[in-house]
Structure formats: C-alpha cells, structure tokens
Length: 274
Image 1: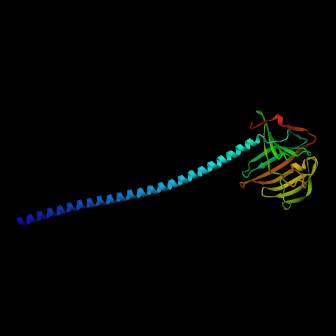
Image 2: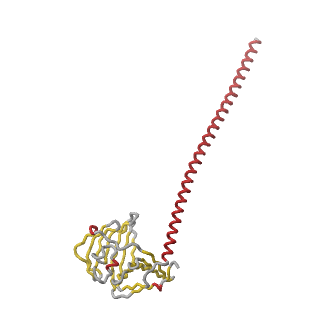
Image 3: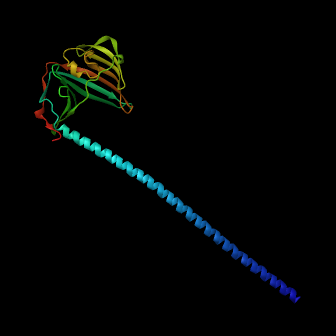
C-alpha cells in the first residue's frame, strides 16, 4: 500500500513537473514568437520609412526644380517688364493731339452671371490726322498711327500723368466672307448708317456704320475694313474672351459734336515712370 501511495505521489509530481515545464515552454515559445513578430514589424517599418523617405525626397526635388523654373520665369518676366518700363519713358509721340469731332457713346456689358456694367465713352476724332482717342472715365487713350504708339493720358485729383508704349497692332481687317450686309438703313445721331453682320472668333453681332466724312474713317474703323463700311455708331453682339467667357455687348452713340476743338498737350502731363 505504501508503495502504491509513493508511486501515486511520484506520478503526481511528474505530472506537475511536466505541466510546469509545458507552461514554461509555452511562455518561451510565445516570447520567441513575439520577438520574431516585433523584429519583423520593425523591419517592415524600417523599409516603409526608407521607401517613404525616397518618395518624399523625389517629390521635394521635383518641387524644388519646379520652383527654380518658376523663379527663372518670374525673373525673366520682371526683366522684360522693367525693360518695358524703361522703354515707356522714352517712347516718342506728338507734342499735342487736336480733335474736332467728339462722339459720346454708352456702352453696356452683361456677363454670363447677369452682372451689368454701363460706361460713358467718348471717341475723339480728327479726320485729317493719323490718330484718334478713346475716353473712359478719367483716362483718354490715343492711338497714334503716325508714330505707331499708344498713349494713355490720365487725370484725377492727384494730377495728370501719361504713359506710352509702342503698339505693333494695326487696324483689324475682317475677311469678306465674315461680313454680311444687312438690308435697309438706320439713322443714328442724324447720320444714315448701313448695317453689317460680323462673325469671327472674338465677336459675333451686328454693326451700323456711317461713311460720313465727319468721322476719321481711316483711323477709327477698328472692327471693319477701313475703306468699305465706315465708323460704327451702333454695335450689338457677343464678345468672346480667351478664357471661354462671353460678354453681351452694346455700344450706341448718343451724340456727335462737330467743329469742337479738344486738345491734349503732352506738356500738361507728367510721365508716370519718371
């Protein structure tokens, strides 16, 4: 009996020892597994960090290169602008511009959002001169075809200034197949006008123009061939901008003043860039 008891005790101790060893082994295995997992995680994180660092460095390098290129463009543009400002201080033009016919017009513009703007505009003309003027608010712009110059004269409470620059653009010539003569005539401000329909990439609309000698036809007719259609006293249509936006546009002469004498003298204005 004693032997049986001792055997049972020994067996219990062996089982307990085995269980203890099993638990220790499981802990060791779990610890080893966790260590492997941690090592793998760190390795993956390290690889990911390196890949992200390489990716970000490439992006940063490309962005820095983009900034460098943009800075070069900016510097070039600033240089060109400074050159143009210097050129503006010495552009030659007439000492005075004399006008004897004034056409007062009303211009109405409506954008695609329905916003409306109305401007009072004046054409300044001299049929015997190679220039004409266009005034809006406190500025008169003179197109001087003799000197191939555009001169802007501005007047306000601070004083009178001008700036001028070479103007390579000449009168716009519309192709014959882009102009359609309309039937009938209209009388605008006492002048008989013929109508024309014009279609081109920038403008689509109708124009009623006078061929009276009162107007400086050779120098003010910017939208139609200068020898055929005359000076527009009424225009209505759509203007298309470079960005695809369109603008409903109406320009109507309200009065024509003949035998006026309106003179702009260079000496009365100060060069804006001096």
